Length: 173
Image (cartoon, rainbow, N blue to C red; front, top):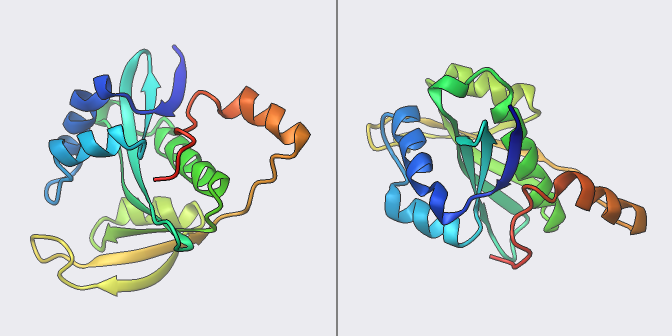
């Protein structure tokens, strides 16, 4: 009964698409976009008992100080097990490793469970986007400052030991 956090692989696409379809009623990224994001190293998955239990998509913005967390979702059967928290931590770590200091995202204003999750994780309200979603729903823009990570000689050993399983490819997107 192991849990692994890692970069998504092309073989994960069906599971990621299925999780997205059950997690969100509208505004899916869709199969083609998710396939491209996986190929570009922008998707992190949590694997539980050899099945993909959740994923997040991180869009890096070269030349800008912010990373956009495009989505984070956990399958219905895997919720309330801490997988969303682990995915968020992995996204923050990868952003910090690449030198970013600010994580930004949008959440439906009527998704109180998600808003509570992100507030608990240290996100703060940074604005509102009326009509952001295709059904006309308002989005709340959230931001979180993330600490830099110093992987000096000792830290590099720690990085390999703890984070290798989920580290995204080293190339800049």
